[in-house]
Figure 1: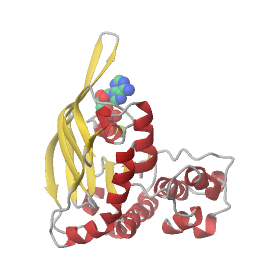
Figure 2: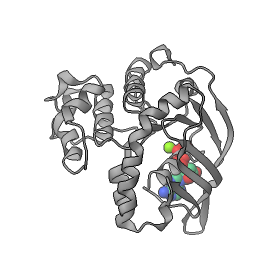
Figure 3: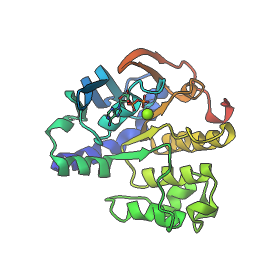
Figure 4: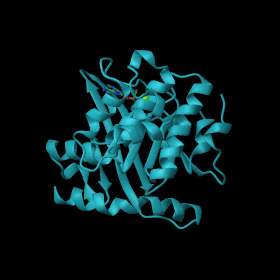
Length: 260
Ligand code: ADP
Ligand code: MG
């Protein structure tokens, strides 16, 4: 597992890569997927969720995976994050193949390098915002303080609130603080605003945008909403298990200007 540690050191440069991005210098890829396919089988039925996806994610980049329901977005993100394995193809994180890792290695990859945010916040109801974040920082190697993580998402004044005492958008921001408190290399967000109205969703996107700008965390954001795609450096459109289109945004729209 020593490579995971050297990768952690290498990622210290990710903040500088935000600067490469603004100067149009291509930063190095952090994650590369090649010919990914995924077939789910239940009984006689086969679902081809991914059909030969190639993808390269550069350090410090913010990408949006845009596509209709069922197009394979979550399947792809879960494979990139080591939550699921492909039926064929490979994922390379820096210079290592995820396919070479055993279960313990994949757990370590997720724990040390990947922060996940899902549509539903998955907070523990009996713990405060601070305690929900501390659950993760207690097992991380170089975490920020939970207070700092919650400050970054604008919740410095909600530390002692329980999830039931927070709005949906605030709960999602706690989930984002929990995901980034361990300083992951990758932040993977699956429809983080899917359960929220537009103004509340914008606050959540602003939190993601701020994390990306301040920590330089390479970020992939899933949405079916093309308005949200405007905040990305690059948009990958998914259809029927493939990346059907890709474009770079010449100008990124700040999250606060978005509405839907
Ligand atoms: P999206 O996130 O774009 O809505 P998904 O990646 O969740 O799409 O799903 C892609 C396809 O794979 C869909 O047809 C879905 O029904 C199917 N699928 C996803 N997960 C499973 C699973 N665990 N078992 C069987 N089929 C699945
Ligand atoms: Mg999905």
